[in-house]
Image 1 (spheres, rainbow, N blue to C red):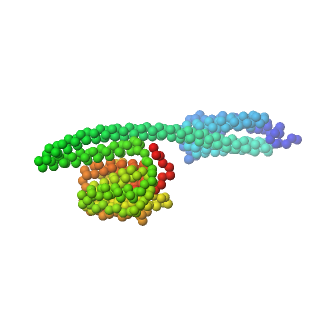
Image 2 (image 1 turned 90 degrees about the vertical axis):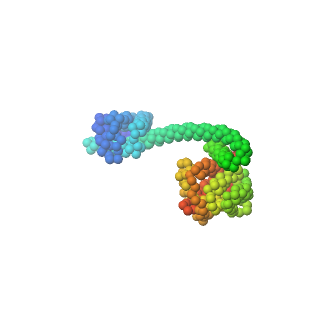
Image 3 (image 1 turned 30 degrees about the vertical axis):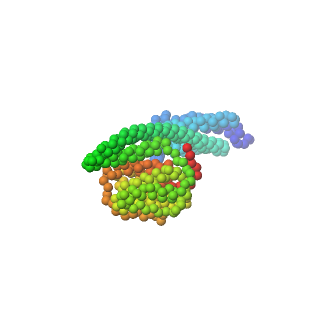
Length: 438
């Protein structure tokens, strides 16, 4: 008597009969599967689907499974297996389109496997005469069916997720490019407007100078003329700042890194503005090593120092300003520090523009996170609070500092409080590994 192996004559008719039984029980199995899914508290997406939408490609997949059980040769089996994979992939695609999460789809596959397995067990109980290899063969085919189904569904989800992510990246990239273009156009418009206004201010300045010369014998008119001249000069400086800020925001500025001595540059600049401090009866102290060789854009570092020091002198009515420089070891990175302190009334964040206010709040948080052992203490305030009109142009100067710090990979820290002055610290890289010289 022949054995009942996978190729035995007795096994094939038994598998064919099993496949036909499964085909006859198809509708009942699908209904059981749907009820099982609907009773799962972790699955909810199926509740909005019709029966046809819920079944999706599973009937075609079961067709391929039954053809595989009945296959006469390896070629037929492989064709049935490919049909199973294709139906499983299509099922994963449709579940994605129906709004399923991947976990929900995989749990549904588990319910389907249980339903088909129960049908196999019922069939075996009803046919005790079956050869011993029939049910193990069917179970192996079922395990492979559901295993490949899960893999193909997951692969479909992965492909679709990647495609969706790539699409979002393209959309975000396009939106970012448009936003950057609008920012550059806005900055260019500001620059052109400020440039035109500065030309008009030059004309007004020349006219006010002529008028002042004609009022030499009239003290009252001469005083008014001097006020006009100072206002024109202040407006000219403000427009220059606006042009500089517009260039930075438009990305027209590039850093040009070269070795320089930060101590020499800062000491010379402080000496150049010392007469202004003396005129206002303020002290201007400097503290730091005699030499501090670093790499960087010396002109832009000086612009940062200039804005900080002039803002500090403008904010201070009594006392003065202290400028400190030196090495700063930040988490093992070799950097250096510029610190500008004043005895002014403290910086009121709400007195500057909203974007600058947020930047200064970030700078304050950085100061709180920094190593207290390396920070110079804030000086006590010796000045009365300023009127809001006195700080009108300060926001632009601080915005320029912020943009320059970003350009130089420097971090900005701020400490200020009621009854204390203001301390700004800028932490610069001491060496730039790679840089553009354009």
